[in-house]
Image (cartoon, rainbow, N blue to C red; front, top):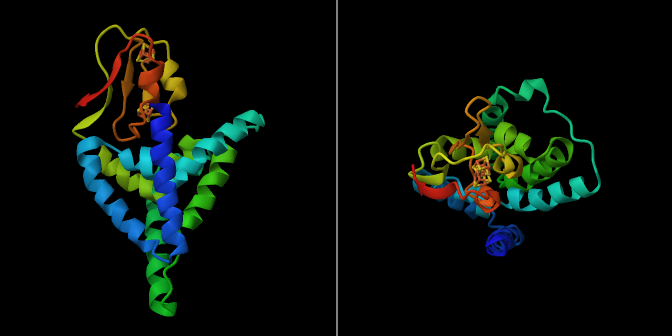
Length: 208
Ligand code: SF4
Ligand code: SF4
């Protein structure tokens, strides 16, 4: 299953690169728009499977761990989550200005891709996913209402935190009092990594 997901991610990355090379990267924004509707039903599958930033952030994260790179705490000004909305507004404005003034389609996605790799090396993937990404902030909005999502079902969760540790988006929290895990569908990429590590088989992709 892990390899299937990786193949899907790299196929989407290949499509993304093809659109860049052929000068049609703006079509990717159409795919992104459609993915917001998909998120209402199936959660943030765009982020987990199609997003070229996430696909490259995964090996970047692996590399930074291998190199034992020091991980900084996200700066205070990012914590409110408003920066992602500012990033979204700035991206749209910049695209409109470049188009109107110079008839240029600003390659906004490749630019954000560079930013995402920088933040992954500096602060880890969750900081970019949850606090900065202008695409993620929209996915979060729609993903919150997903009809299907990964969830912790049943009472036998031991609170071992294996799922919490592996989640790339910090979507899982184990309650300190009752020692039960829960998943926030607004942050979940539906990648299934948590399901694979849960020895008690408490996690499933099911109706919310
Ligand atoms: S891995 Fe499973 S048992 Fe452990 S905290 Fe997560 S849901 Fe609970
Ligand atoms: S590890 Fe689980 S909770 Fe975290 S993003 Fe993947 S599916 Fe969602």
